Amino acid sequence: MDRIYEDVINYFKEICKIPHGSKNEQDISNWIVELAKKNNLQVRQDEMFNVVVYKEPALGLENKEKIILQAHLDMVCEKITESNHDFLKDEIKIIEYVENEKVFLKADGTTLGGDDGIGVAILLSLMLNNNVKMPGCYFVFTTQEEIGMYGAKALDISDIDAKYLINLDSEEEDTATVGCAGGVNTIFTKKEELSPSANQLFEIIITGLKGGHSGVDINKGRINANYLMAMILDRINNIQISSWFGGTKDNVICNNTKVVFSSDMKKDKIEEVLKTVINNMTFVDDDKEIKISLKEIESTSNVYSTVVSKDIIKLILNLKQNVIDMSTKIEGLVETSGNIGIVLVDDNEIKINESIRSSVDTQKKYYADFNCKIAKSYGFECKEEGEYPGWDVRINSKLQGLYSQCYMKTHKGELPKILSIHAGLECGLFFQKNSTIDMISIGPNLYDVHTPNERLDVESVERLLNMLIEMIKNI
Image (cartoon, rainbow, N blue to C red; front, side, top):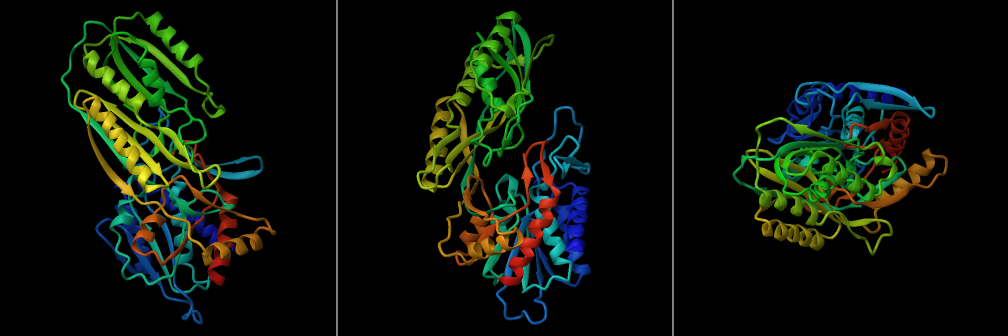
């Protein structure tokens, strides 16, 4: 076990050397193809740079049911404000540290890419190690998962004759995911003319919020920086927005945002607005590091009219967002949510992106349509993209029972959790393509994914690998 575990960590470090943000997976995809060819494995790669590798069954296991092990190649690219990291060409710099006697890996000022780099590393270790006796196995590496699961949507699985699928894209060692939410991205755009401002220009910057994954973290009470900024701007008289840059990903709770605007209010009055808004809000401990700066700007920047500026602000405040509905079937599960991940206002366009997630397809459509109606009432155009299906919990799943048995065996009798989650997984698309496949999703302990605070519990990787191999032996 030590050797294969070391392989996982080494492969993960190699993965971190290859830039692999969404839509930039060609290099890592080609690398995996070359590894497969060097090891005489059957491999195919499609136009989306998805890779499917088939490994023949070990001697004596030819009659065992075939399995699929699956992970996605892309990562969310987020960084701290001070970082000059270029995700298109720079490798992720890994930092190993110890906290409470546990060993962790994190990145230097950026997301780590453990989601789903560690899943990819686990697949590679099993794919290229012949000491683990396996039935026939398809190793499936997909692309563009983080921006709409476009790789999995395009993937042809008609030649994959496996009965079981284990997805390695979950983030809690003691939990198997057996169902997930579907989602859709709604994009609101508007074109308007700018003109010179007759009033003083100001800049407000919000930083220090925790942010996080817009699915699994949406119920943790963390503030969306774009929404907070809109609350502030709504209280400023005769506001005319020049620019607004908040967030870069639909599926990330925005943790920093910057606005340049003009107003006939004096700086001290705007400072009073800031204090009033902040004092009337409740911040969870995760957001206690919030910082808000205000300064006057000497500039000749053009601005949008007060009417257009108010339309932007009011739209953000009136969109259905954060936790919208809780499930009536599963206690504690968010059923429907919205996240304003991106606000982009410059002299070329006004653009607001919100992702809607729901475990109920009709609710997903209802709130996406509702938000589009709100947007149109403020003069915005609306389009939907990146829709993906949810994944219903399967009754009488063999994999669920096998997972529980193997987890207890490798974790001294401890009972695991089996849950449906409020996040999207590619399992929903595989289920849509072939509803007979029995699936679960597992993974080691990852914390604060989709943020620069992302970190991987190294020891949990070995425990998960041990449990996964036990499952493969008994499938």
